[in-house]
Image (cartoon, rainbow, N blue to C red; front, side):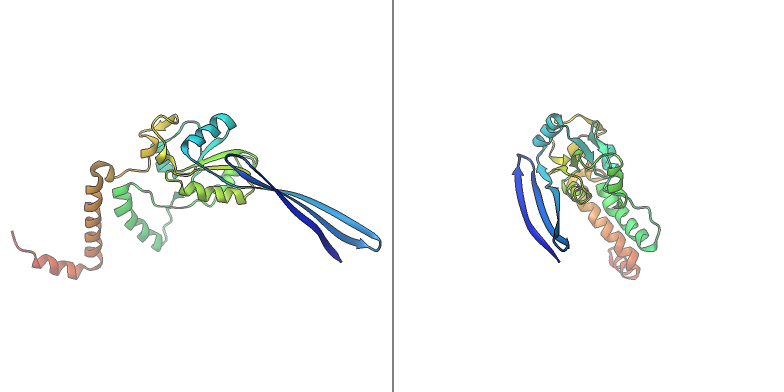
Length: 234
């Protein structure tokens, strides 16, 4: 017969992070007249969500390493000097029929007009981070908008990492000169590429019209031909 004695939880807070100290005592009877006490200690860390200014303080004052989780294309356009790079998503070069169709549509729209790569989740993300950092390492995760870094931090927390922070609005919120950077553009502009950078909103609208026309002609050639015949001759 085994009984649980008691379980208590204590919490401590800092400016950036909340952690819980869980102390458990288990009482189990192993044989008549004798008891066995077993105690376990568990620490669970909460992810810190901070802005760009707080991120600078963590790096400069508390020794946090910067982990960039953007894809290779955005990383090469601009990244913080001396940061580490482990992409949460990698380029999808699979050649099954469904992926080929999706990649073709993507490259004719998002890829062409917005410069976005066709990607898939990186199956080796957590293992790649583990190969470079211990679970006790202090890591500041960054991406362009703040979404991928949040997902990445959650994965790493589940894998046992205890000192994690995320820049909530991503690198797009970083002011010029806030961090020393490397690349062909500024950090806050690294998420933009393709025709959208040349003609702005006009190219986005025209691009949408053109891709819709392309898809209509591709999948409905007979209807497209009839519409062309109805057009007035010059």
